[in-house]
Every structure is written in C-alpha cells, then in structure tokens.
Image (cartoon, rainbow, N blue to C red; front, side):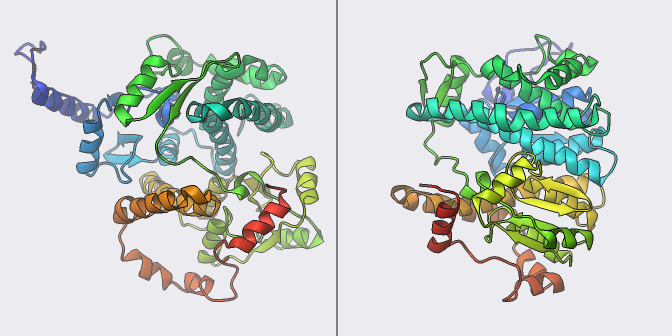
Length: 475
C-alpha cells in the first residue's frame, strides 16, 4: 500500500511531505514495472522528441513533472542529474540525461536505428538536420522582440530553401516510403514531428514539397503514431500564456508577448546569456581537387573545413586517437562553398564534411558516431553506448561554451567568462573522474597528436577571427 492510500487503495488526504513521498513511490513503482520515467516540466521543450520516439515504438511511459524550483534542486542534490539539467529519463536501471543520448538508446533498444553502421550514419546525419531546424523554430520564443521579425524571416528562409529541400531530395533519390533502409526508423518519426511544427509556424512552407507531405500522411497513419496524435495523449501542445507564466515562476524569467501579424509567439527574456553559435557553424567552406579524390581512393578520410579548430577539431582528435591518417582540405574562398553546394555535396549547405568509406557525411555528431563505431570506440552494447553518449554530450556542451567566448561582445565578456568558469568548476568537471586526463594523454596515438607539428589546431586568436570575417564577409 502506497502512502496516502487506504486499505482498499482509495486516495486519502495527505500533507506536503506525504505527497512528495507518494510521488517518489509512484515513480519507483513505474520504473520497477519496466516503464520509462520521464522527468521534465509539463511542456514540449527538449523532452518532446523523446515522448514521440517512445510513443512511436509503442512504449508506455510515466511522466514526473518538475513543478517547482525545489523539485529541480532535489534532483540535483540527490545526484540524479549528471550535469544539473533535464531532460532526465529513468530506463532499464539507468538514469540518463542529455537528449541525444536518451534518443540513441531508445532507438537502439526498439530497433529504430538502422541495420548497420552506414545506415546509422545516415540516420544520425538526417536527424541532426532535423534537430537544427526544430531548435531554430523553438528558439523563437526567447528571441528579443526587436529582433523577432528578422529572425522569423531567417527561419522561414532556411526551412524552405535549406532543410525541407534536403529531405525532399533524399525521398526523391530512392523513391522509397522511408528515409533510410526502406523501413521505419527514428529519423522518420523526428521528421514528422518537425513537419508538424513547421505547419504550426507557417503551413504554406510545406506546399512545394509533395514527397514530404506524403511522408507526413504515411507516418501519421501508423497505429502507434496515430494514437499519439489523438487528443488526451502525452503529446504536448504549443506554448501558450499559461505555460509561459508557469515557466516564468519556475525559472524566474521575465515574459512578454510578441504582437504582430506574422505569428503568435511568446518571448522569454531570459537572464542567462544568448545561445550564440560560432561563425564556423553556419558559414563553412570546402575545396575539392584531384588530391582530395586521390586521398579518398587511397582509403584516407578527407576532412573539409577551414584551417581552425571549430567543429572539426573533435573529429581530428577521434581519428588521431584511433591511429587513422587523414587528409585535410582547408577553406580558401567563398566561391568554393558555392560550388560544393551547387554540386550537392553538402546536404544542409554547411560543413564540417568528411568523405569516408564511400560516403559524404555532414553533421559533426553523425561523423563522430560513425568513426567511433568503425574503430571500436563506442562501447560493447547499447547501455555502454548510452553512457558514452551522455558523457560526450556534456563534454560538447562545455566545449561549446568555451568556444563561444571568442565571439562574445566586449560589454558581455566579463559576465560570460564568469558564467563559464562557474559551470566548468561546479557542474561539468565534477561530473567526470579527474584521473582520466593524465591516463588518456599517455596513450601512444593521443600522445603523438599532442606533439608540435601534428594536425591539432591552436586556439582561436584575433588574427584567425579577422581572417574568418574577411573570408565569410562578416561585419
């Protein structure tokens, strides 16, 4: 009998402490019964794609909503949030954080992740593009009001001219019902979710893409998906005034409503710093010549990027640690980028891009996952891979924060440096075993990569930033 229940199971009056204990017992009971337990606030956010994937797999799940700041603090103090943030999912005896880690584990467990490493590489690559598009749309709610019109125009442009054409082209290229392997995988579910968001945002954007509209109808008709789309399911609605007000109280943020004909959007003026992205994330160039072709034919991966760390450096590190020689083609002119886009070599019109094993891969995580799988650096089973993904995502978050400092406006630099130092010292580094650093640095391939003269890149300096500004015509 649970706290708050009578002998016959009826609910009795409980005080605050008993109510908290009741919630804990219910969560434990759900986990023991084999149901995943999802911890988040009662909104879409970064948990919605997880809800979608579980629902499409026909998996029942429990939700434990974070309703007060005290709920969040308790999870942190109990040591259940590795990086002091949600989403968090309890599944198969594990406590997983980091959205991608959770999605990868669920997709593997329920056979929605392709039949081999090459199919998974395509699924990862397509999924990352979907997540980029979803992120752009979802971030409109925290866009400053004076920037909203320009931001909406940018999102519409990229949706119509970069992302949706890429998926329409994939479907047209093979003429099959699904994106990869002619069977349902996670990427079909993710794509349906984002297509519905696009419709909410501006339904006219889907009009020029008949194959995407057909896929949307097809996937929506699958029994598990159809059930999830019905009223009363655990699918979450768009943010409204009530949700925004709840967020304001929960996270102590200021809220205003955007007024205008474009769309009904709510703006959260968050006290935390903006989610800036490095210039190399959106402006990436590449050059192709006969040497590139020769290197590819010789079996060496060919890396296309500019001569800098950016989002390619972690790929260089992983290849070096695996003892794999690789070629690099550095950014030289904007014309090179235009040529590569016109040649159809960059699925989302951006780099990093790596040619490997007859594939042309974009999206950093997709590239890393393929290399890790190919060279046996990705754990022995799904549970180990889930932990590797979770730890890796935390590392990526920390690296991203540090990289963004170089683009920080001078008047915000001091505050951002302070924030990065605080999170590094009190959130990320404590989550890892410090002894690993010296041990891993001593491995032969890593030690070689750390020596002067290797393909490892130095930190960004003013000279590099100025070169990037000229190269990409940035003001």
